[in-house]
Image (cartoon, rainbow, N blue to C red; front, top):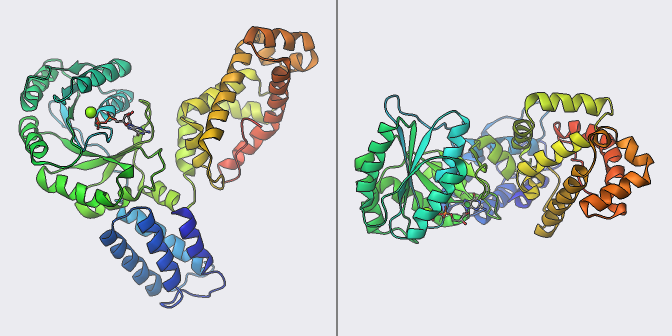
Length: 439
Ligand code: GDP
Ligand code: MG
């Protein structure tokens, strides 16, 4: 999508104002780019129309180039199309909040149950999961395992009980335990069918859920519009969760959901780990689509991961060139926790595409660094100079960590380089380039 839109902008270079004529070609590119991103055709049509009307209708703002103005209009329209603001989850004022998850098979419902519980836990809310996929015993086991992983109870009643009865029993149990949020997992099908819809309707009747969230795989593509429409008409949804946004998908589904159902995307899944669930920010998604990179998401993640005081402390150290191996370790671990390197790199403008091989390489090098730093004494970690001066120390670390002396030397050299490069990290916040962790 990004490259298609970029060519749209370049066509406007040198133009003085936006006219009906000179936007024809850029708009054709935008249209094609959106279709390639799997946005459904009616949505694309309405979008292009809205942008064209606005582009020609608005006079040129002084000091803003026509191509910049068109970017702005497209950006704002994209944001509007995706709901404008962040849509928060709604919580019930009395009794437990009930969240019913629906969606086709394999989209990530069961994973979302546990991710969501984990997400709510961070907000101080207790949850209980209800295993409502009775068609595959493995589905129940999967939920139980994920529940254990995030430390929340899972209500199960085996495969012989009707989902609506399981829902009723589970809800009672949650009320007894004074659980804040009940999350019900349901069975999906490969395609929409009547039995699935009937079952969901029945469960919904019993649970009277606060939220009915449709889980949509970001790869769904063109069919997303029809899918969302059907679920919304049949059972009535309050929002959607877009999963697998970390994959290769172009994310076109994100543009269709709100447009066809009037319901917002509330959360996005960006990976298989329990931490990989975040609010959906329409403006960031629009920025990403337009090739501005997801800078804000990156910055926010970095801040969340390195707690505030750590970040400030780190900044001071960077400024005073005292950045040591402890900081290095904290930093590399923070990056690792932020998720796969692809995601982080993908969020940085101008970094382009990263191959899976490069990602694996980067992750491997993080592991190697960690092993070597862990083999250092506290004093060595604080005073990297000790290692720079002593081949004996480097040799000892190489042996203890199972790496070569050359690797240790490289690491030491890298730390000193990092001291310089870390200063540039501050530049990232203003859209500069990111210092890489490995060479
Ligand atoms: P369900 O059939 O809807 O319950 O789907 P599952 O929760 O079992 O997920 C199906 C597969 O998708 C599993 O292998 C998950 O690990 C994977 N998955 C779920 N969410 C994400 C995501 O956001 N990103 C990626 N990459 N994989 C995901
Ligand atoms: Mg499942």
